[in-house]
Each structure stands twice: as structure tokens, then as C-alpha cells.
Length: 73
Image (cartoon, rainbow, N blue to C red; front, side, top):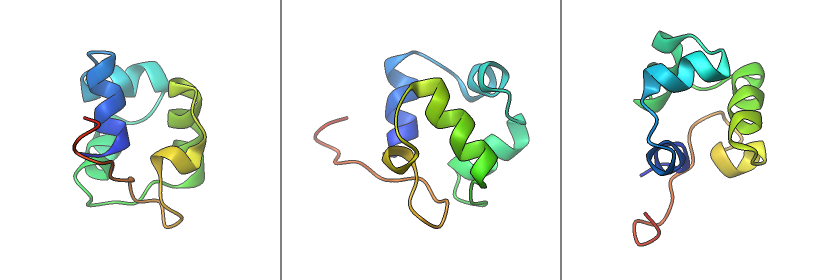
């Protein structure tokens, strides 16, 4: 599970709701979630600000989503 999935689950957010709330294109967001695209700086910043966490808590240096320990989730 990625940190993004975990945070969405905690807030009971769908990808559609998150894309609207964070101002991110839904298609882009779902592609990032599926690992088909990497997040660019603007997207990383918006998601980190939305969840009030540092960017490096959500993303690896290359823009891919960080995985978390399954025991936490």
C-alpha cells in the first residue's frame, strides 16, 4: 500500500474527490496511483499540502509513490 492510499483511506476519499479537492487532473492522479506516471513537482506539492505532510513522505525522489509497511495500514 502506498502512503497516498493510506491517507485517502483514513479520510475516506476517492481518487475523484481527491483530484477535485487538491486541484489535480483525475486522469493524471489515477495514472500516478497505478504507477503509470511519475508525479511532477507541482502535483507533489499539491498533494503534500492537501494532506499536510512533507513531499518526501508521499513520494520517492523520482516522483513515484512511496510504499508503506503493510502492518501500519
